[in-house]
Length: 498
Image 1 (cartoon, rainbow, N blue to C red):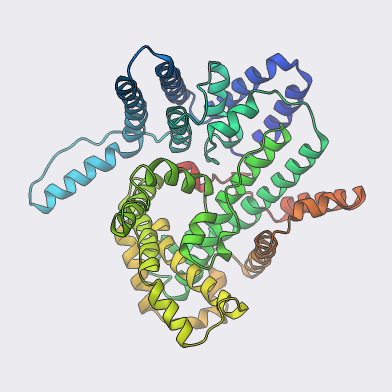
Image 2: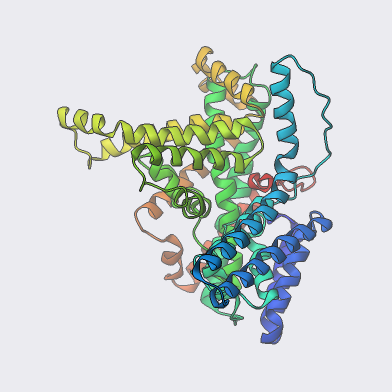
C-alpha cells in the first residue's frame, strides 16, 4: 500500500479514528494488526518473514537478559551473550542474503569462472525481493545489539516488540528507528492531541509535495534520458543527473516526512532522517545529514565495532571504506551500488588526507573560510562529487554508468538548453518550468532548515484562518500539480527496492 495511493488515503484516516476512540488496552494490538495488514497488501506470505525476524530477535533479547542474572562466571556469560548475538545476526542476515543477494552471488561466481574460460551452468532462482526487508531487518538487529550492550532492557511483551518491528508508517522505508526511542513510546497508548495532529498533517502535506509534485515530475525526465543515454548525451545527461539528485532526495525524504507525519498524528515521534544535505560543504557533512538513521546505524553497529578511529589513521580509513562499501551493497545487489558506496567512502578518505594541503593553500591565498563565496564554492564542489557518484546509483549496471560518464564527457551540446530540445524528454516547457519552481521551493525550505528556522512552527504560530489557508492552498496545489500517472497509477518509492 503506497502512501500516495487512494487506498492509503482511506486506510490511514480509518486507522487513526478507530485508534483514538477504542479502549486504551486495545490500541497496541490494533496498531499491530493494521501494521501487518499494511505490509500484507504487497505480498501476504512475506509477513512470515517479519514474524520470523521478530521472533528471533525477541528471543535473543530474552536470552541476553537471562545471561545477566544467570549462575555463571563472567567468562561464560560473555560466551553465552556472544553466541546469542551471533545466532540472531546469522539467522536474520541469512534470510536477507537469500532474498536479496543469492542470485547476485551466483551471477558473480559465474562471471569469475567465465573470466577464466570456464562455463558454469548455475541455476537462476525466481526470487521476489520482499519490500522493505533491509529496513526492518536492520531495525530488529539493532534491538539485539542494544540489549547486548545493556542500553535497554529486553522487552517482555511480545506483541509490543512485534509492533516495534512492524510499525506501519516507517516499516518499509524507514527511518530505521532505535528500540530505546520507539519501544518506550509504543508502551504508552496515546490520546488525541490537536497540536500533534496539526504538526503531523503539515508534515504529511510537505511529504506529498516532495513525492508526487517534485520527485515524480523530474523522474519523467530522468527515466527518459537514462533509458536511452546513447541518444541523450552531453547536457541531456548532465541535467538528468542533476534532476536525479532531486528525485532520489525528494522521493526518500518525502517518504520519511510522510512517515513522521503519520506517526506524529498517532502521538509517536520518529527520528529526523534528512537535514538539508545539499547545503553541506563537505561529503562527510553530507553523510551526517543524508539518511541519518542508516548512517548512524552503520556508525554504531559496524564502524565502531570495527575499531572506529581508535586504532590508528590507516585502520580508520579502512574501516570507513568498509562501511561505505557495505552501505552500497545494502542499497542493492549490484556492483554499481558497491561503486557508489566505495566512491563516497573514497571522497571522505581523500578529504581527510588532503586536508593539510587544503589548509596550507587556503592560508597562502588568504581565503576567508567564513565568507559566503567560500561556503558556496564548497557546497557546489560537494554537490558535484555527490551527484557524480549518483550516476552509479541510477545506472542499471556498472558498465552502463561508465558509458554514461563517457557520454557526458564526450558529447558537447549546450545549445539544447536554449533551442527547446530539452523539452522533448518527457517534460514539456510548462512542466519543466513547474519542476524548476518546485526545486526553488525545496531549496528555500531546506535553507530555512539549514539556518534553524522551523517553517512548520512558524505556520503553527499564525492565526487559524492563515493556517487553514496555507493547508488548503497546499492540498489544492498537490492535487493540481501532482503527477498521478495514467488512470491514477501511483508511482512507487525508490527506496522500496532496498
